View 1: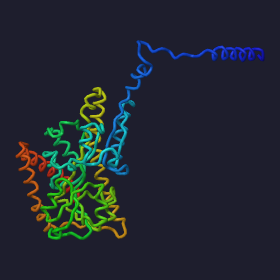
View 2 (view 1 turned 135 degrees about the vertical axis):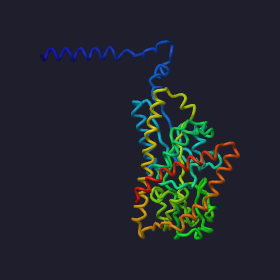
View 3 (view 1 turned 180 degrees about the vertical axis):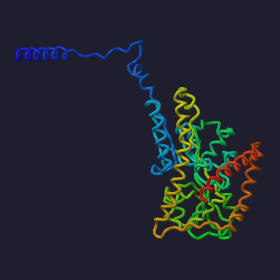
View 4 (view 1 turned 45 degrees about the vertical axis):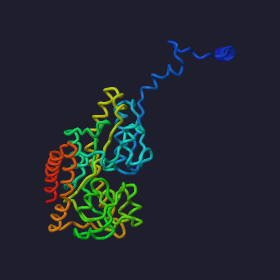
Length: 365
């Protein structure tokens, strides 16, 4: 046995000596290709995409986007890898859509409202129609876009949209009557600017990432927002009251869109995965908005002192509804002037909101 082991060791040394003394040449690539070109097919199997998101990484909607990206990677067996750039690190909130169009990012999530005038028909999604929940607002927005297929978003591939629960008034002073809004400086975006004007306030346009500091420094006295932002963006720390104005609850529709050329370049089987997962995430985003709203309520209740939620009285609600009617009329007039179906679009929205509000009302009885 010892003699056999010794022979193996001697043979190994000899092989190493003669083999290592000769310079090893790399194998020549076949077909006249360079070595880097020969490796290219294997490298091209993975599609790497960038995803710009205006939400901070801790926000539930950014986490939903992350889980969406992971699910696509899973269902494509690793053929697609999506890198997220949250918090506006790749493109700021108002530039996300154009960033996708121009290829700065492959995918983007932001608000239609952050670029006023760019989406004249889809602006109607944000009207103060009394959206009861984020789930309802999200489903309605997707159904409406699927029905009308607006030309204004034809320069991207729309994966899906989602929308927050009813926008309420969060302020640094108590607002329980319409007249208390007169002259109040309120943070707004998109159509909520017109809502505040009709309510008698003084709108100040800005995106969510700017709002905390504006409230803290007194640049604005209040903000129109879903209650989830009071936790998600920590704005509950710099307000004292919330007026529950669900009767005129607006929403803010948010797009998830992809660069058209990037989409067209995907194989059909991968496109199907994107479509299937996106359809599933519509409900997930809506539920996440509702859960976040509840967490927002819990958050402001936990602060010291707790922030108050003020319901509008039965006498006040009709006043607020009447006050915002010009916002609806203005949308229809502007859309019709551009040969867009403003009347039909608004009617479909109102019908859908009324239908979705009934189960919510019944649940509260």
